Length: 336
Ligand code: UDP
Ligand code: GLC
Ligand code: MN
Figure 1 (tube, rainbow, N blue to C red):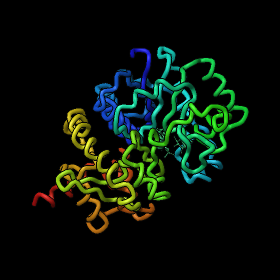
Figure 2 (figure 1 turned 120 degrees about the horizontal axis):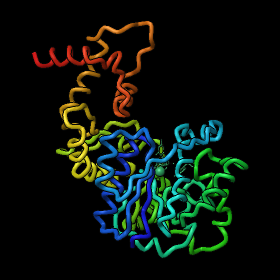
Figure 3 (figure 1 turned 135 degrees about the horizontal axis):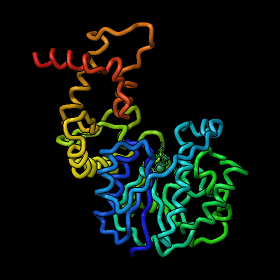
Figure 4 (figure 1 turned 135 degrees about the vertical axis):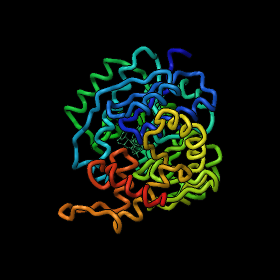
């Protein structure tokens, strides 16, 4: 249906990688709906190009930030103020009905039947089931609703500092008014539930249609070896949701990474897969950097982990540690 769409959001390149995988997963399961991604101006050109190949519509929006450090600190997620940007999804009025999905979700089978539901349909949040989780929801774009939501933000703020607090405040009768608006949990299976109620997961997990990698550690926080099909490299235990993580990485490495390589060409690009030269080079460089590079000691030096994270976020220290001269020197010793 041309007037119905799946919508997601990515304000930076990391979430853009999530959006690429989500879009691919929707296509692979033959959705008949349009695919829309809202992006922040910070998303790089190569990532925008790849998104354009997967999505029908790539729309740049202003990044809205709640700036609510106090509430966000309670969730230990200072980064989620920008999820206010999600509210822009109500402005897509050239569609009559949409399903919003977080960029950290993955579709496991066709879910077009969600469009039979009404605004606002969503699944319970695993942390407080009388609230809905705003990682997957059915809604009707409307400028009027968009205006009312912004007004609600100004008047009441958000009890969690992110969009989920606002949306639960605005659609406050969700828990009690209409059971048809409660999506089954299989449409938003958060990885958290796997270890909080393992027997239920064993019993029903096979029916899951959408998995949501909710929480601080995202699939792209790990490193993947496509040959060995092995995931590693984050402080969080990989075994908590091995199947879905592997599924995300298989899709990312097979369908998304080749597109990213085409777009980046010769430029440095760290895919998160261990097989590619640039990532190997970076690992060697980071391991040896402390002992071999001369650095100004007046500044506190980031740890290898912090530096790797920055590199992955596209924020290499080009003027310092990661300067061309330093990298060239490293390459020279490597080649010798
Ligand atoms: N998001 C984004 N940039 C950010 C943080 C969040 O684009 O810096 C978007 C993205 O679509 C993401 C959603 O907002 O999936 C909600 O954030 P997240 O999934 O990290 O929250 P969680 O589900 O872990 O609570
Ligand atoms: C939640 C949701 C996410 C939302 C965030 C901030 O945990 O999963 O979609 O953006 O809270 O409200
Ligand atoms: Mn999420």
